[in-house]
Length: 224
Image (cartoon, rainbow, N blue to C red; front, side, top):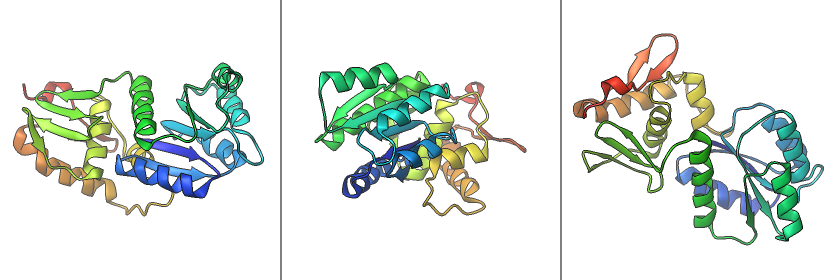
């Protein structure tokens, strides 16, 4: 999924970004409240990780503006001031979860997974016939046997399985799978889908091409 990370501590931001990218998320980083407000107005993110203490515009003000635009995107707030009053104020403004600094990376990753599952009404396991995607362990199984997929192939498959029965456009894939700093070739999506197909088609798992629209994993095509 595509995540906006809003953190003015560069060392912390880089560490969080590396951890999230390793979990096959696309991550964009901004360091001020104003930059965050402009980025969130684009409406391309699945989740925001938002520090409260930001320069130029506080995290709470960014959150207030986001909810004023009627966005329901999940927001995880980071704060160095873990008081009851801070948590209540943030939750009242529309935050979905809170994490106090300092924190352990596994806890942040678990909270991110939980918020993304909640926002997409999904479970930790995505299933398509005999194909099973463990979104927590970042592993894929077919008939209980593990499949060897690259991080990018995992990300493509996760997006298609989360939207099973619906066409996923190429632009939508780019927006979800790549961050601002990523180099995206003209045929990057086609290459990743091709590689994924080569591994799935011998198992009877089909990724359809819907001409002019994108790609689709249909429930009716699932092998059981």
